[in-house]
Length: 125
Image 1 (cartoon, rainbow, N blue to C red):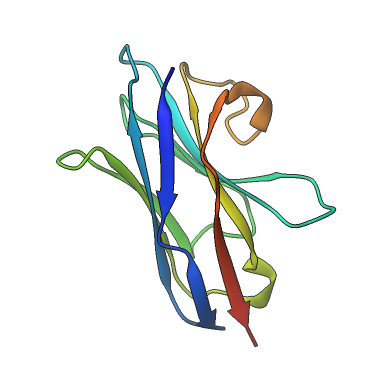
Image 2: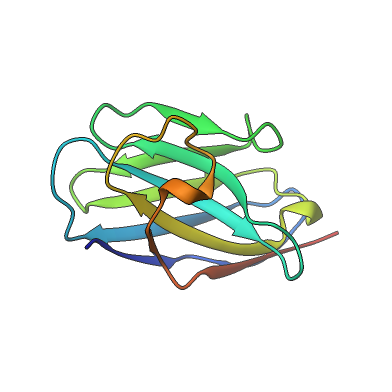
């Protein structure tokens, strides 16, 4: 079972930037994925960005494409989510999640079994 732990949330004004980091450990095999999801109270969880760790392919939800960048830091075994030009509607709890495979629908949460505790991102107008 993989372990994932998020860090890097915080508060920022609209137009600002934050970088989230997900440390993961305990995974096996070359075909796995790590994704960032977000959820506000009373709302469904939304897939934000996913990276296929083995070959680096990335996927983004439309609302963040061009503003967010997911990448892997091989030296530190972290997955980073660089968030630029943040908007108030980006305010959410952000979760990192691990999949021991390559999901056919990468932004759907059902393929991810290992989840972190979440980190809060707040964007003020």
